[in-house]
Length: 224
Image 1 (cartoon, rainbow, N blue to C red):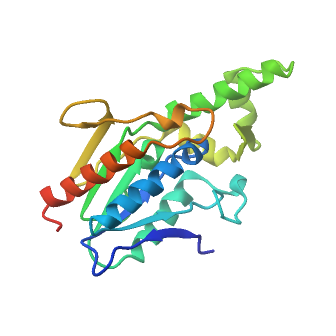
Image 2: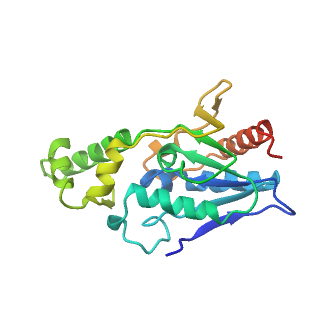
């Protein structure tokens, strides 16, 4: 099933297409508004920008509990295959775990994180929610439950395959990669860690900084 892709294009022929890979799970919801602002800034600078829905996320009709990390990698590669001309993969947080299958001119990653770290965060949130509801659970008990049945974590019902793959997933090496963090310095941009907020947020300055850094990296790679 083809998933929805949000696309913003510039006037005229684009310099390149930026394929945005959002953070995973609830972090995607918390950062989406800022990512759309970044896409608009990229379009104003002559780039096309594409933000695909992953199976089981956003407008997708696929049940999340039928999806695993490998299927997300395949879906992203399929989305990349529809792009004509040079493309840059721009990933945030856990999105960097699934961005290595497409053929791209270069990659750009913001605050990449390992799958085990994401999984621990989700499980700790479940333990805390259980405690508030008068239920006793632990990381060990949740891992045991997840081995045989889908597990509800922060509103996401994840399959045993998804949890197993996420627990061992690491970002993969790719050619011509720029990795940036939040902060100051040559390999950082100023911004807010929106993925840590309880509700979706927006950081317009961060969106402009993301777009400017991607555009500068594109020029440095000779893609303009």
